Length: 174
Image 1 (cartoon, rainbow, N blue to C red):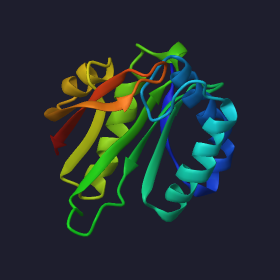
Image 2: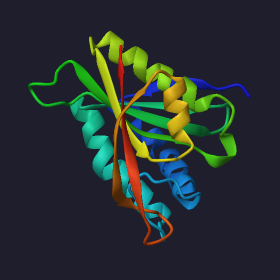
Image 3: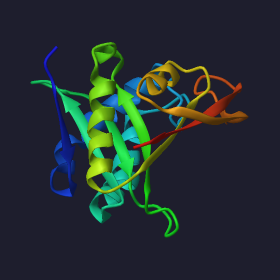
Image 4: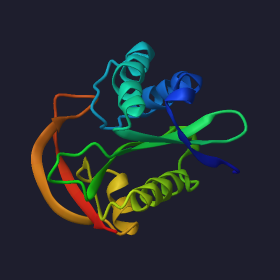
């Protein structure tokens, strides 16, 4: 599979917002724990990107990356650089999403490499993230050099049920 990873700024956001919404929608349908619960509609996914992410990208608080092949967006990740005044040395990884049909092809690794490179360019020395405890992303992050800082049990509701899942906080010194 051939694909590219690119940074999307505010000027090109509208060109990818529908595709980003499709990736988010598909991931939640596949039970990804990324802040949304079922039932989850495509218009809700679009509203998240246009109402929450677009303004953050426009203000420079978030850096958005997409992976795409010749016909569609395969995945996305965000680097949150808008941190408190006492934390200018760090950034947060947010919403690493790979369409279920594009998984196991290196897309997540490529997106994470792009986010990490951007963090380094911006002089960030620490990356943080959280992921559902036991989720398939947890070993991916560990293989990329992230360390477990701690686990909070019962942190969030599972997308498909009332079950409460834990979250694992992770970090990587750059």
